Length: 452
Image (tube, rainbow, N blue to C red; front, side):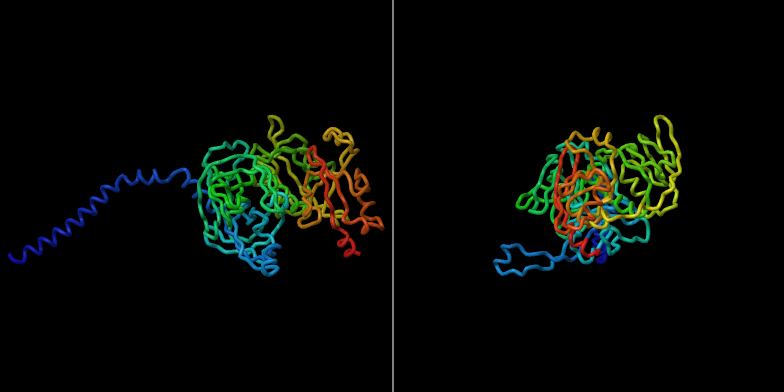
């Protein structure tokens, strides 16, 4: 009997432990409900988007400031850059900020699945600080869900995901603080029409998505205000997607020709791509596509915005046929679009990086209320060309160079082939963008000399 007390104590302890476990199970039984409560819209949004967000790293050389040099710093130094990108096409096309990858010797991309790639810069837009880079994934990537920034409301909840200070996949939450902000980040970079948010955005967040509560990307994080807390900025998604479409177009026009020019619009999510004009004798004209048609699918790609149409053209070749689904009034048509070989480039493309197209005089007068007699519409801008570096973009209208009008392609050829061309370089240019006349200088003398 003297052995019983220890045994009873042991049994009691085991029973007590078992009771605690059972009690815990009983307490946690409603945990299924607690779990559902924890899986908030924010958690669901992050889970949905995370596979579409990549981390970007790389080493670049940064020039010292004048103040730094005065203090004895080296003229330049190597730094480890970091940023974020979003997948816009399953074949490895990634949108990010240009300053994230500019000057980076080797762009290292890491996916949410911890796969590592080396990317190359495909194209970029200096005005909006956006760039598209390309990796070669072994299997299709998850494309981010794109929303619209047209209906954003100050005070609505937003979420930022990015590589903040190198801490990968950092998630922060906030609200839309304000809309249409203009921000001067540095002497070289000025942004217009940004979304202001108090979701924490830090170095490394650049190029990452700003999400609404539904998990749709409504902005691309781009800048922080030095010395301020709770103030970050993002490029509105509608503008970013319009720029991304133009960037992919600059890639596609080098390979194929279709003859479709989209109607001007904000670039937001819609029912399809509205056809503005169709070039005479082009593949689109032969397919029966008309101005005013609404393209809702190209090949296997559903078209909701201009970016989708450009994605459908990626990696295509002359002679390839795309099945186009077109809505014309109340009628749905299925038209075969057989892509043609890209038009040969000329001196304007080689020297300036511009592909230009004439505008009919009556069309020019209807579109612009100006003293200019005519101009040439910019169809494409070559990446890293003098024109791209000066901020000229697709849709601009070139109305003059130096002291001459540019009403016809022959006018441009005359200017570029003048024997005194080097003497007038950098050559002043004038463009129409909307109702504004903008000008700048194209330093092309060295390129012309090199060609000779």
